[in-house]
Amino acid sequence: MTATIVIYTAGFMISLGVVGAMIRRSLLAIALCLQLSFLGAMLLFSTFSQIRGNEKGLSIAIVLMLAFSLQMLLVCALAVFTYRHRGTLNVDELRELRG
Amino acid sequence: MTSELLTYALALLAVAGALGVLLTRAIIHMALFMMLAIFSTCAIILLQNIELISAIVMWLFGGACLVLLLSASLLIHLRQTEKSPRKIVVSKVLFVLIATYIGIQSIVLFPALKLPPLSAAMLQTHVMADHFHQDYGFLAFLTLVTLFIGLAASVLMIRKE
Image (cartoon, rainbow over all chains, first blue to last red; front, side, top):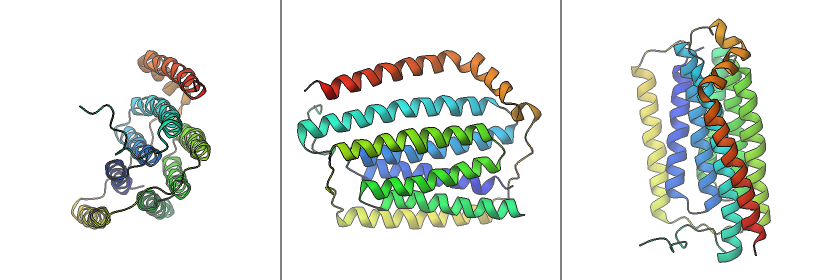
């Protein structure tokens, strides 16, 4: 199996996720775009771990998934909280913490 | 040969799902495209014979995270609030064109990298579990504790009002 196409796919997914996180304004949409980036990173970890013949990459991938589930939980709770208090999820309107 | 064709098709599906996530407006459509990308990625990882990671990605990303996100979007009755100014649409189209150009150039210029067969250690799940336990056990424990605290904090935060 060729690894090149898998690596390019993962890179494309990571870059699309980053661009989406920069462009989109809804909090949930940003979370989904970040999930896309994490998915690409997972694919890269598993592919390079197989190329190098080292199973440590797979362990890092598992830790990465745990960290991402934590992030998703917090983002969803924050989205519900923000919507109930502000009535919007638009990140441009949430500017209390700006200096 | 069949495996290579399958990988190309799955990679195409994953990229289509990723583009769908970026280009659609409604959260439910984004989640469906995300599901397509997750399934394709899981199938690619499964073709690399790493079943454990594929299953965990399916459970965590496809199951837990997406269901959590969809339930959050149902809780807040989200309307379609995002508007897309012309600048953003133009930047998206430009990005897709540039990325496609770079991708095609890279595939043409760089030689194909072949995946080696899996080592014996990688085929045994308990070896990977040993590495995970020895090298990243504390980190995983820390993450799980933080996850639990985050869960409690989010329940408290929502119930506070």
